[in-house]
Length: 263
Image (cartoon, rainbow, N blue to C red; front, side):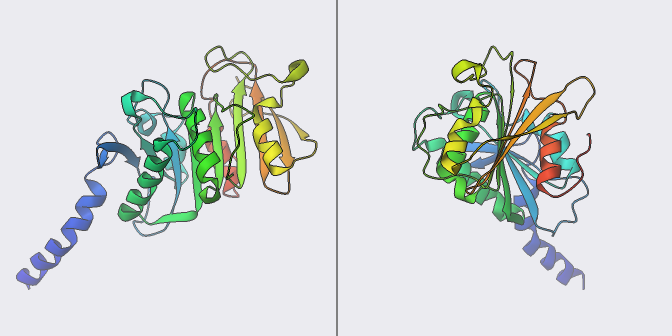
């Protein structure tokens, strides 16, 4: 009996090692690159997991998102697997199409699928600052496989030609952002940051949704477009270049059909 037990454990060891050898601050290697992964709290080990791929900001690595209360803190509490790729030289190649970083991020998802059972219908792409622009680039090129883009304080040019698009776009930006400037449109149009997606989806007029708060010290103003090609949501606030408290969790709750909560 002891021999049988030891033999069974030896067969299981490669799978267990694959899943557990790289979590949190220990990166998973993928060719000559790497990414970080954080499974959710209280996961049963078998249920398919929604996925949040989050691209870090400039001069950061994926080690930051998996330890960030406003990113991993919200994902792990909501049963979402967090994947945080590492950019080459701590940055991303997003200004032009056919970016190798898009292929790398897609490979990260596939590699993670060997370690965890992922829910292909609930793959969310996110990012902050330069990472937000990278998330836009990924959604622009691989959007057909994306349930929602959750972008924070960074965009592509609104004249970009995107061959694909996600089912939903949710973008938040501060009016006083001095790092990735708020992209005002003609005559100070504050809906311009999502013009690319509105044009691509063939949207008509947006519907103001009023203000909302996840925390009492930050008020966001929301506009939503329900379009033939998808849904676009824009949140704006009076602040600068930061990840709003509660924003990621709020979006994940709504996307998964739950009542939004904080944290």
